[in-house]
Length: 256
Image (cartoon, rainbow, N blue to C red; front, side, top):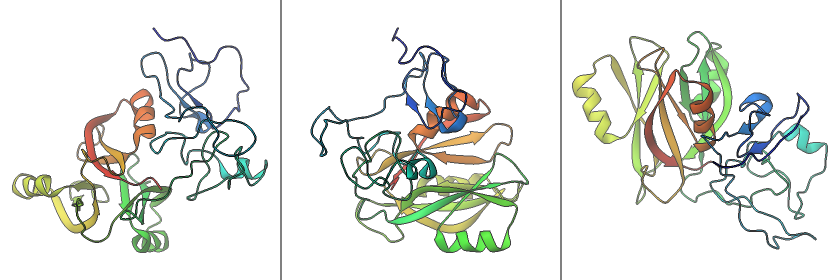
């Protein structure tokens, strides 16, 4: 059994921490905290202690670290514009958790951001859209509440990429599913309640070494509705939202 990473008492408003095994001292998902436990320890995915710039050795986040883009920009702005290495404090829209900002460049093919909306009329159901559709949703569909950047994709074919198609569940209008070509064909043959809306974007397959893994969950309270998340959010859902059932890896995208 692994020992806890923290002990004692902490301020109730302590926020945006990443703790592998919190020993029940902090609550995962509360105030932006990412907290594991003895059964679901979170690996922060940091590099070795070394000279990454600045006057002290540091641990730099690896490309798949759950700390990346999970901090709070407003809090960060109160303590300066650079990190412990002297680099810019915020890269790629949102600050990282910790003293070192990941200096990771976006994947050259995965450059188009996808945004996530939750349908407030049917809580627990989601829509993922590109920038132009995002603007239409914000202007015309107030029942969809924007939750922010989800991941980045490609809009054109390229070597190694696969197409992802969007379906709407006609039995629960305003809820969506995103699938690869193989699953698309199966849905068209066997599940007439799903209406195809066309090609959504291109990504790398789930077993690729390119990009970051995106997982699919189904909401068991509303069968036929789905959520797509990165590794850090996957762990939070497994700990806190038992109604969401993990269905496996969906594809690989960029988190920058």
